[in-house]
Length: 181
Image (cartoon, rainbow, N blue to C red):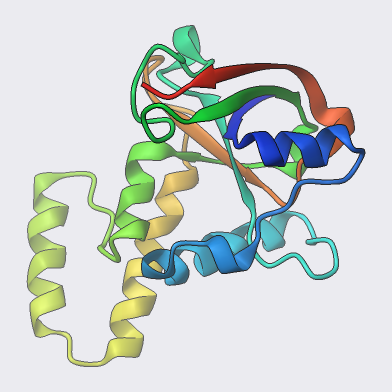
């Protein structure tokens, strides 16, 4: 299955040297630690992590939908303006990757219930205000988060991301160095 990942030049050097690329847990955003731990647990349910690997690496399956799958390097926001990076095209077996809806992932990141209708949103807003048991509240949110993996019926222009435990040198199909805009 084809994927893309935006990486630093140092990360490309790791791959070119023949080593696997893995996420350094010390570099993971501390504000999103709970979300990263949750997605790690979901990936571990699909594929066992290599020894010592704590967090997955993020990939794009469809950056702006099926017709614009590859991240457009002319767009801003990939990396800091003026910095150099690389877009790596990858071929990774589908059984090594967990796919999810990029937009819905933000409910996990922001520790909110994932609502798909206005009525659900109103219901969960009231529930969050009334529920005092933090454990029950967490379990309720996590149950809704599983909907991020329902990508079969997404529109063709929807962004789909993936996570995998590591990128291996043999996954590389091609790469392009670019400067952030």
